Image (cartoon, rainbow, N blue to C red):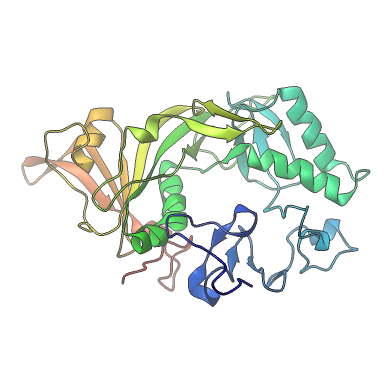
Length: 321
């Protein structure tokens, strides 16, 4: 529980305990942390759903956090298939279909060793979790499509963007993957996966798309910071409209003067989420024929991420309905 008058919080920084996303609207500032598979209440050090890995740790409570070692342990979010930055398959942990692409930190041999530790029950649960945690910290989450990547960005950033009254943005990259046996890889599009670059925070009117192309700074396995080039190739941009029009911007003669000009300049789609909780795709670099004329393509794709009851299947929610 936060101590009154002894804490500081900025709307630009959305993370809390162990670097996980805060959800202050649930139980107040700092009292609810959004892990990938369950919500955590740091006031009591407990989750409100069972551990998805509970079958591997029968000696633990299914609601425990980090084996009750809240100071030196890192809670893991899931098990993954691991690929190198160049797209080559390295190994997998458990039976999950999730895909992660390493950021280039650590040799293949070292990564394989960490995967081996994560899979080996002869190691202690804490040693296994530390090995898996290092792999997760030094890799990118993979999405099946560019639209899924944009939706994932919106889920993590749209509410914070509206609250901070600033635009957030990221570049989307495609990484070609390969198995040792050259088989089709589940969870991909033609054996390609999509990853998000660093999240950049702009101002009320825009975010600098040129900044989105500057690579990313990583913490290596050895605890050192290093600037790297993002794996894969640039295939799209994603950003939020915090206060501006809920529609994608067009016109303007400058290089980054509008959503349309960015899409045309880089010859890639551009995605946008707005304060209404909508997700838009703009293929301004492509023309479509409509009513005897040509128009740039833009589309509201929010319905692709809705459940049957109308709720968002991946959490694209509006802070300003």
